[in-house]
Image 1 (cartoon, rainbow, N blue to C red):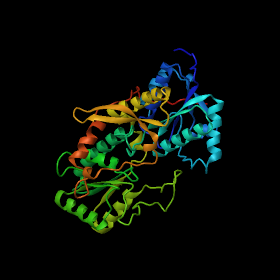
Image 2 (cartoon, one colour):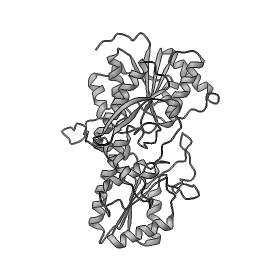
Image 3 (spheres, helix red, strand yellow):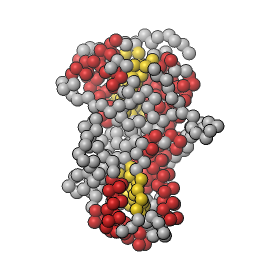
Image 4 (tube, helix red, strand yellow):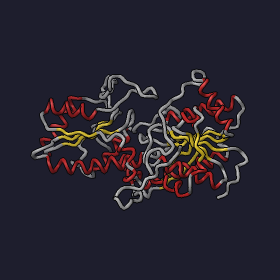
Length: 412
């Protein structure tokens, strides 16, 4: 590998927000593509915090084997964070510190791998650089298991989380069906999704015909009606012996309050801290219907399950990483590489550039025609959209002890 320096400075890559099963595959693609262009890559330790603290990692220390191993390793290899910068005026000092770090290390390309808030940060950094006439190209690189980024057809990370969800619900439903006569009658499975029900919808792929689990899906886009919900659960139990429910963490009442509002706490992005809708629903079923209930909240497992990654998702994650570097070198400032669907059957897709201004702080919710008329399931249109995204297996290599061989970088 040539160590010749790029004539136009260095590239800085950072990971942001909740990580995914394939975000490191994007990192691997970024580093590999940059090396092919003789471009030095720095990685920020713990996302934007590393830039603020001038804590950067020189990826030249990574071997080719390390870079390849990132392809099948979950988590965030360089560390991530939840930190949303405010406006250029309110957080002026922090933005100026970012600019100082860029100047100190001759960074001319900034790739921020994250979701809605990260796209907003990249856009603001671009504006700041322009204000000071500093030559910096800012690229937002998509990732989120929530699948709620605007413009892009789907988000890297979602396909694998969707596959994990559909498989888990399928397997759990078989367990509940086997035990329902003398044990659990109702099973509630909670998935992530604050305002958009994409991951909840993916659970619908577990069933292929009427009567298959999941029997009820609760979406953030549909107001939660407790009386109607309990009546539906009881009807399914009476008719089939058991009922499997999938609920998004972000379901709300008709008045707009979160069903699982954890005491009004806030996360680092200023969002209500959610989690706990499954035990709440289970408690209501138990109290009102007297059915034995079990619940599960996969939490981090749904976004870190690399052993069950989607081959399509892995391909998406690698493609946006490669394109991000190419767009940066072309000078496509304030841009994000997004997935464009060419056709459903056979599934064909490509990557296109999209303006960050159309993505930052926007949110893509489930289309109305993806949700069944009764509000408790998915339509054929949703199935047609979702199925290609979970297709194919991308298993990690396994060691002789029966565990995946994941890479853990020594970044000290």
